Length: 225
Image (cartoon, rainbow, N blue to C red; front, side, top):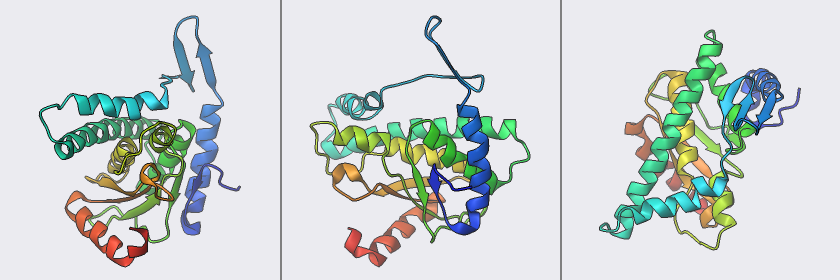
């Protein structure tokens, strides 16, 4: 089987192939009921939301909520709200997935995350070779999210941000992996298409180690920054 919805190192491809087979079958069970205002996928209730409503427009709304703050403070506050929303959704989806298959090991549940992520329209996921997704303090994930709904929305707008915009994507993946590995994990976007980078790239690690990982990565890859 050739993976279509995610790109990962070869040694963990079998786990992702199994997840893709299962989740793709679930999304084949799409049941639209506009006469009652309902959308179901595999008997789970879903909602469809315009991507721009949860990215550019919502971000601008949040920024306007903090008129007494300077631009830096408003940006930080808005980014945190979006991250926390994504984190909560990611945790909830991962718990739901785990309840359906309690036998999931951490890596198997990790594998289900990017597949569900792709089918539900958040982004494609590419996990890079240097990643080390272990269930301990050494957890490290370096990954790309090509075509995030957030960056696509900003690129289609008339705005040109000079900051990373994919806060909900960072939050969702952090929330999902925190449940999968029973760890407190946090992700930060280091490259973003919204501000002109070639891809949207993230680093995930335990919060107290994240800043050191980011500093080391920027030192090792100065050409990217």
